[in-house]
Image 1 (tube, one colour):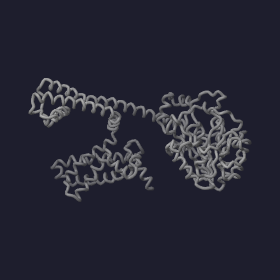
Image 2 (image 1 turned 90 degrees about the vertical axis):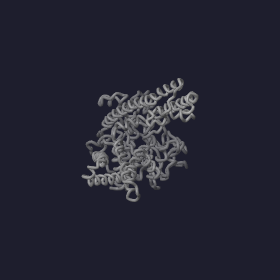
Image 3 (image 1 turned 135 degrees about the horizontal axis):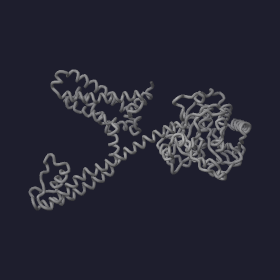
Image 4 (image 1 turned 180 degrees about the vertical axis):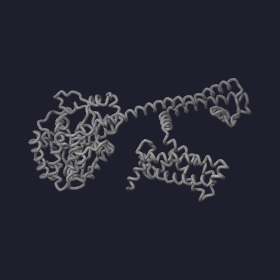
Length: 566
């Protein structure tokens, strides 16, 4: 097993989740069992009779558990960056060591070895290991809920503490002035009254503030402080109690969302295409179909989509030209996801299919994904929107810092398209969402002005013009002969802007195919069209590459035949 794979597996063990893979659970339960065993050993070692009779066995348990936890804690620190991104790097590991559980891990384990090198009492070091019992809180849902409740209300509790502190200080100063007159030898400075006032909140267990007021005003202030003492516990208790209920309710909703996400996943079970016989993920599933089949209400579907990472709701009315008076039709889409921005698949091909706007264009992602898969091409797609109020498409790049994931997206394209004979093909939609209905369905865009169908423009984004021209003619002929679909090159769209993505990548051969939504979203032959395009592109641009492995498109995998198989 490679080091990185081992680290990934260990990070899943140390995620403190008792509901992961089976063998991960076994390790978790072993850790919990040894924590309990170590605590019992420390407790039994306090009995002299037991130590005299079973001292050797207690020491064996002591040494074994300490050695085990030393390895475990060391591995936790090593894997901390995979458990949480904030623990990356050297200083991230230091931050982990000073976190609540990290500090408990270290104090209950590493100090054991000090007595081998320093004259430190072994008993004192052993007492630290009772802190191991706190490590069990990692796995207790009740403690997790309580800690989340406290974090949720920490601002409100801090405000209440500030308020009570200020009021108590004011009352303690008033108390000094009235009691200084009555008993000046006792209340000889302000510290005495402040100490007495705050000591009442904890019951003054050490009698270090045994200076009760004797004046009438002082006793009234003492009563007020007594009431505030109740508030000190009542207010946080009320806040935590309400937060506890909120967290429990949130967990209940999250559990329901997870169950509904599983239903959505099942709705995207592979279906066999009638013409290609390929098993593929549906382009979309209508909301009414999900309601009828899985008995989910619209709010449940929306909540599950919002809680998921790879589902979204679309209105297919946006895929139809405005002059057709489209009717709203809500559907759910799923998409492949393996990067922060969406999906990146390296198949070692000289062609990379890029979906710059899949996040905002219905069905475009499905078409582009299967075009790349059938052809054996690389695939890069934007599927994640960081700001839903201000969606960003990567087709026209206005500011590379406007979207934090854009540099990653461009880096992946440039990494895949790292040779002069590489081709980048962007897939976008057309003829919908307010656009007019064009007489052609495929629009090839190579960086020229609208209406210029020559190759004379110096702004062209194609270096190998003969190869593109031959590909364009063959694709045009294939689409028209097999599907009665027509094409144009730069007739209805312009791409001279420096913002165009083709001008932001290093590949010398980059062009865009805008495909009518009537094909992407509504044509039942869409997969056959993608197959024809893939085969033609392979014939012209990747003829020397190995045939793509299409076994996953023809073989159903029971239990794994829902959603995209990256």
